[in-house]
Length: 335
Ligand code: ADP
Ligand code: ZN
Image 1 (cartoon, rainbow, N blue to C red):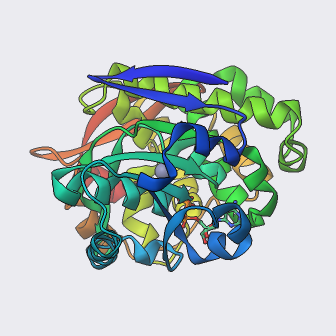
Image 2: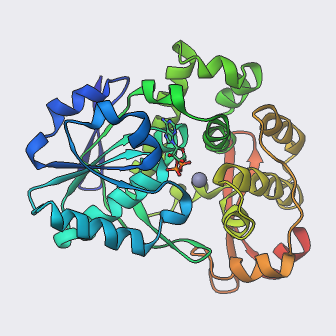
């Protein structure tokens, strides 16, 4: 099912509940190159065999400039010119890299995504942000540029490992917390293994969450307003993620709990326990001991930093988030 959404000046075609084979109808096989990782290439060699494919190692540590350079080299070896299309088939690392490389290769070629992880489906592939990490600083270098299309094939999720499901649910719970109290209730009533069957609830969950993200980004592509709410749990999350080798979902789960506790003080938010309970239900950690000094130092490099403090996302109630500037000192005493 195709639905087109406009982001700024770009139209993005979303193909929900499709099959990977439909890619043949969207993209010209002679002028298309897939970018994927070793895991997926091994699992889905048959699906990919009729496409020119660049494969990189899997893992967040590959999301660096050196990998982008390597992909550029391979594109040159494959004699890709400006009329080529680069399609990222994989999780968030792959979609971020594919969007970034496509944005800089020959000053920009077209690109599309086939997100294969829950996290990439509901979050990472949507919104046009792409880029690479620099040391422990996440997404320090990148561009905002929209893909031509995003093709969803839920079959890929059959091979998604447990911990990657949990990662994806961290973003789903984030969406519910900041934008959708009825989704929050739905998540409280259901559980991961029900959704995982990819029957009606699972398919709807993906579409619902993709739409939450689409709507927020449509209203604010360049992150001056509401899009910043999507950073709920991410400011602190990013500061501990690479430093402590946590997965993105684990890091933002911990970040969301800290942000709710701070919310309790600053907005009077009263439902931290409900959030903690929901995160635990979906197998996510809700507390973690870290070196405060070190984390504050990383926070000071954060892109959300303003003159005297940091723009922090707080909850007012379940389904309603607000942005508030808080000082580094305030943060220090509360984390
Ligand atoms: P993200 O969690 O942002 O989606 P990655 O791109 O690193 O980040 O993907 C997470 C891991 O899950 C990677 O090791 C990747 O190879 C693996 N993966 C992604 N999609 C699938 C899938 N459908 N089946 C099996 N493994 C997958
Ligand atoms: Zn995230």
